[in-house]
Image (cartoon, rainbow, N blue to C red; front, top):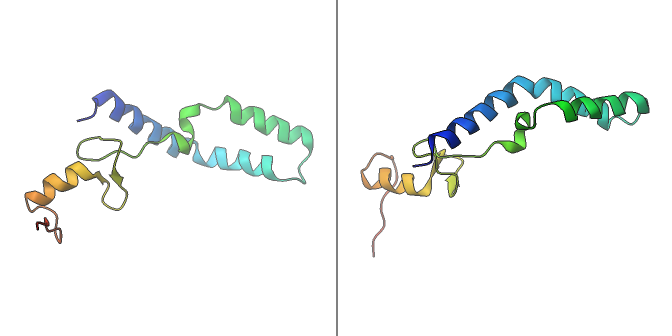
Length: 101
């Protein structure tokens, strides 16, 4: 099980990203538009740099919803391989059969 602080930190980042998404997209559109005046583009870069870093989408870490494990994460199931195996062995995942040979 991951530390509660790591899970909460990641959840806080998700909330910041959701809150600042529109503003970040607007600033990035101004920055990437070559027809915008250079002064406006520079001001947009400065405003973007002043925003909290944890508001960037790249800072979010995919974590297992069952255990909080950050590695071996299946996006489709939103859980790690370890949690998937445990739930599969208990028969709680429909269509998953433990193989043996």
